[in-house]
Length: 373
Ligand SMILES: Nc1ncnc2c1ncn2[C@@H]1O[C@H](COP(=O)(O)OP(=O)(O)OP(=O)(O)O)[C@@H](O)[C@H]1O
Ligand SMILES: [Mg+2]
Image (cartoon, rainbow, N blue to C red; front, side):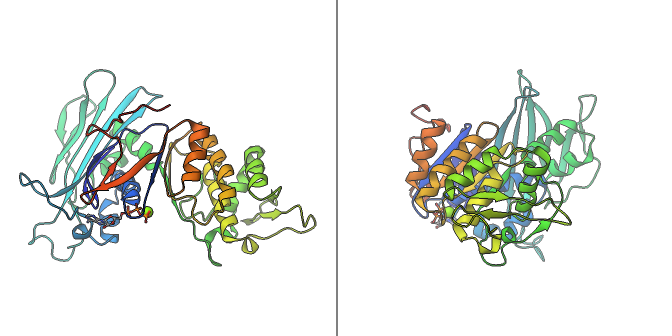
């Protein structure tokens, strides 16, 4: 994964492993790293312009420090993704820049997609499937020839999202699906009106929504569809001193409650649980759901959790890491140590050098000086 000119990410390349653990002080750029992954997904899903506009537009998102003189300023994001099942890897890159002053009337906050390229590699050399420069998009057709894409591509939209949808280009569609399935969780709401405290529609929920709004349905799916809640029961019992989740048969809505050993006769409703308890349940739903996404990214999952909850949290992270790639940024040395003990990965320290985010011990190529244990 590579990011350039995005906020404090002047130019940073990271090799991602099965479990990726980053620790660092306030303002070092951990959330910017997290966000760069989200923006890559947004590019692939087709809402990059929207996401950048929503965070204040290009002038806010562009790296503020000194820049190279030899070219225009652009946010560049790239990813290399290995699809083990099909034994192919994808190489995708996108560049977003400022709109020329004349064209910006009305949509000044929106970035302009300048270039894009998707290549696939099946053991031999990478083969370009799609290449874009400005409005012109070349795409490899079913006969293997690069052709100009006949449709219209707006300067605000990515070709990878547009062509991945069309269905004529299976490789682009596969890539789009893989990246589109990543899930990001950052600070579930815990206030009284939090979606995690409300019943939700009773529809089978193999995955937790990013706002946690279908948490009750995720639990109901584990209880009534998979009929296996061993991991969930263990996590909840450990985190809440022997408590147990109860999930009634879903009707129109899915609901859940907790029974604590001190009050065996009473079911506590989600609105009666503490902020930390609701957060922990949200993380359990994210990490133990019926089906796990290929990549789960967590931004400060320890927020508002007591240190005693961090060992059970590390347990469910380790459990999820058996099937998913995990990416975590944290402030908590205790959580980092607990994940390290279970997954055998070294936490990487995020630092700032001359205003730019960097990872201690990382070479320019993105590899790390010391190998994982
Ligand atoms: N356009 C920009 N150019 C350069 N630096 C920027 C830009 N926008 C934001 N920053 C810097 O990025 C830093 C914030 O990064 P980020 O939010 O990722 O920190 P963090 O490590 O997640 O901190 P915390 O632990 O407090 O959440 C700030 O110090 C800010 O100055
Ligand atoms: Mg942050």
